[in-house]
Length: 113
Image (cartoon, rainbow, N blue to C red; front, side):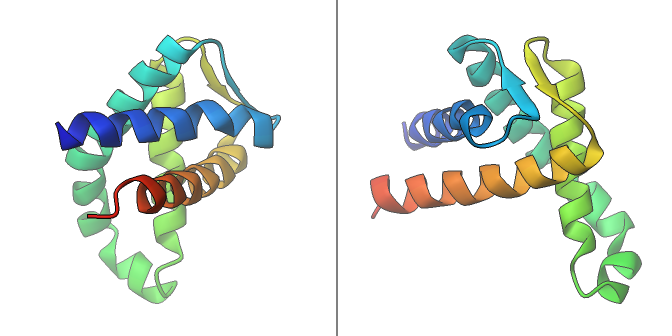
């Protein structure tokens, strides 16, 4: 049951993103549900492999390359889900950062245990 709540929190965070960034658009709440699900799956399956493969670059940049990886994952989801659009790569990096902050804040407010 907890993963459903986390999925809904991430959906709300993703649905709130276009109100804060004009370069990100989401057509409906259903699109946000699908995009949050796919983003979660990609972050669980593909992101760890990319982090491991790019570990030397991440160490050289003192961890800042993780922002690039997060932006790439966000941009990948926008290319897979119709109705979810991101203007460009740097918009995806900024969107991924803002999405992380919003979902973290909502999670800490709603899931205190």
